[in-house]
Structure formats: C-alpha cells, structure tokens
Image (tube, rainbow, N blue to C red):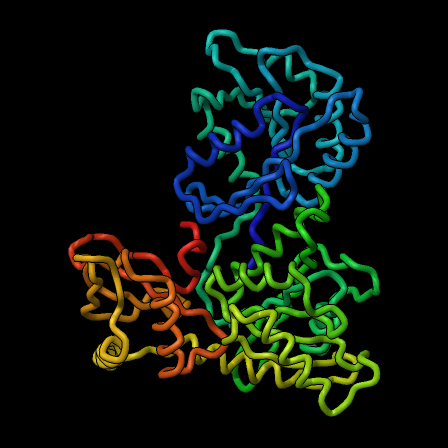
Length: 456
C-alpha cells in the first residue's frame, strides 16, 4: 500500500489559508479522518475527493518581516515542500503582491514539486486579478473564495490531477505490522532484523527515519509487511516542517497497520508520550504489542530484572492490560523471531468470530451475576447482542433500553468478563450499546470510557 500523498497549504499570514483549508473540508465528498496537529499552528486532515485519498495540511502562519520573517519563511516553506507532493500557495486577491508573496512562490517553485496558486478572497467575480498574479511565475492559478465556497471544487480537481494516485485501505492479503515509538528506541534496528536486510538507515541520531520504510517478509506461509516509521516525540517538542510531516506519516502508518509494535527501551519506561501513543493505537482499533528493545544494553541484569520491569510496565500501561509484552535485542537476535509468532497469534485473535447464540448466552450469564444499575425509573435493560462483521477490530452491538444510563464501570465489567470468556489478547474490543428502537449504527463504546469516546 502506497503512502497517501500530502498537499501542503502555504503562504504569508492573513491570506486565508485556514479558511481555505476549512472550506476544502466542507466541500469534500468524504472525510476519512481528522487529526489535530501537534504544533500550535498546524492542523491536518485525511480527505478524499472523487475517490482519491490524500492528506491536506494547513501549515503554520508566516510571521511578519520584523519578526525574523526571512528565517521563518526559509525554514517553514523549505520543510513543508520537502514533505509535500503538491503545494498550494495562497495569496490574497484584495492586496497587491508583496515581497513575502514573492518569496513564498519562489521557494515553492524551487522545490520542483507541482505548485498551484490560489488567489483567495476573490469574492468579486467581475474583477479578476489573475493577470497580475501571473507575475509570481506559477502557471496554475485559481481564484477562490473560502467565504463563498467559490471554485473550491476546481481547486480540488486540480489537486487530484497532480498528486500520485493512492487509495486508503486498499484490500489485499498482507498482514501489516507497524513499528511505532519515540525516536532512537531501536525501530530501524528491529526493522532490519525482521527484514533480514539493511534496508533502513540505522544511526544513533534521533529522527533518522522520516518516511515509512516497508518490506514484505514471509513467515509460515503468511506474507507480512513491516512498516518502519519516524519517531513520535512529545507534542511540544515536535518541530514544524519535516518533522511534522514525518509525524503525519506515522499516523498514516498506524491507520494502515493491522498490528502495531510499540517500542520502548528499558532505561526509559515511564514516559508519558509512550502512554499517549498506546492510546492512539487503541483508539484506532489496531492490535498492539509492547516491545522492550535493546535488552542487550541493560547492564547488571539479575534473574528478577525482567519480572520487575514487566510489573512496572504493567502498572504504567494498565489501560491496555491485554497487550502482550516481549523483551528483544536486535543485536543478539533475542526474541526477534518470536515477534512473528505473537503477531500471527494476535491476527487470529482479531479475526475470531463468536456465534450469536454463544454471545447471548454469555450476556445473560453476566447480567444474572451483576445486573446493570441505573437511576430511579430508568433501569437499563440489555436484551441481546451480536458481533459486527465489517469491523477489523472485534466489535459488538448490545441492544436494549435506557442504555445511556449504563455506568462506565459496568462497561468495564462487561469487557473484562468478555475477555475472560474469549481470548482477545493483543487487540482492543469495542462494545456499542444501542437502543432497540433507535435507528443508528453505534452507541457509546465502553472500551474508551465515558470521557474518551473516539471521535467520528
């Protein structure tokens, strides 16, 4: 599966980049997902127009010249164009061409990437400014108005003609496994060990991998595609430009993957960003395996070191207690092959289907042991349940009445008992509570708790 192309919106401050970004999203045919950027000024969205999927990124606003504008322009535009497949330079129709506009256009053209000029705020259709803006040297010029949604569809048509063809979630028989984690935790080393070839650049410098490296290997008649990604750092430390685009591609790798390996090192276990990444993988509904890498580098190990660290990790990641844990070393090869064994086991777990009659027998047993509590005259009643057939993550619909009054602790109780009855090691599960007489697909998912219902 190809990585989705990236379209970057760039320009000086106050030309309507964010308004154009929002207008593009509202004009879309389909929005697949929306991800908030980790920097203060950047947001991104994965979108589709005429069956073509791509990421669109609204880059941070450019500073005024008196605020080190030249340095900001050089850094942000150069980095943005390095990561993008198509660049949309935005200018303002109601203003004369400024020196800042010229610098942005020049930097974009130097990239040799396809460039589109959007003359935004073109609200007066009888007063075209195209001839004047041709001076910037960009051939493809489109007059747009975010406020009036003018020519947004024309802009999108131009974009999809220029970006590489790619479609998200293309069906095939590959099992995709993504290596996820902070920079310099040994992802590329493990990628090479699993691939049995030096395909990735390995260095003791954080952030060596910027794009998604991938390789297909065969394990016991199963084709497995391994995806090596750039590291994800603490949000406040993620820099604009290339590193942000790398972060974006890592999110896409999680989206592509069936199972994610979350790598961490034994000397840095209680790291908040690791918990955040685990939460991202869980919310994405992907399989998850915790991997302690560089085990060979741990000095003064005792027979109890592994058990002590396992207990510590179990406490830190108690919200994903179902995720397997393995200690590995790419240098010595310790447990590297065992990763394949665990991966295939998790795949089988995620594929298992439970007969409806068995599910409902289990449901009645759970209710008899501990009926759901509610409010006065508002007692929840659960009647029956089925397993969804079109969801890669094990998902179950539970139909009943007054389901909105079910407490989060009861949801947790049900998930714990379902996992006890059936083996769901290595994968999140989703429970959707649905009113019998309400025609909608999903209710609230207890998998994430009351305050952490995943956004649609």
